[in-house]
Image (cartoon, rainbow, N blue to C red):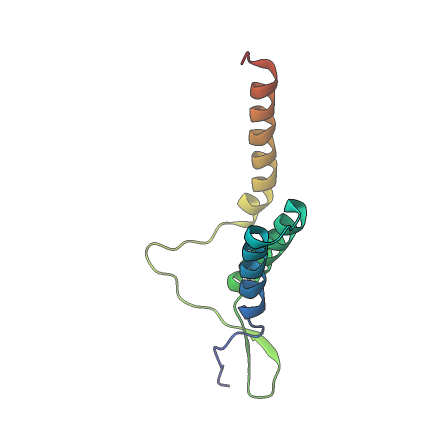
Amino acid sequence: MTLHRKPIRTLVPAYLLILAANVGGALLILPISIQLLINTCCCVYIGCLLSTCLAKDDKGHLVTFSKSLGEDESVISMSDAKRFPLMASAFLFGFYILFKFLPK
């Protein structure tokens, strides 16, 4: 089984949408909420596609391929991945409390 390492979906439309939103915001009257929504969705889409390792085999079926990790690369464990949203939420809530109750 040979794998073609070309991406399953292309990233070009997402990059073009980001460019169009930024140029449109500078040249036209584009609401900031629309520009922010476009940029956020495109960045999440690009990150999701770049984080997955999908390829197509000769029959056209989607398969995953793995690579050997280098010295500077590591993989987080499932418990760390589950704990991250809780830690990030606690951190952000702590900042909220600091800004709310500390004098200006």
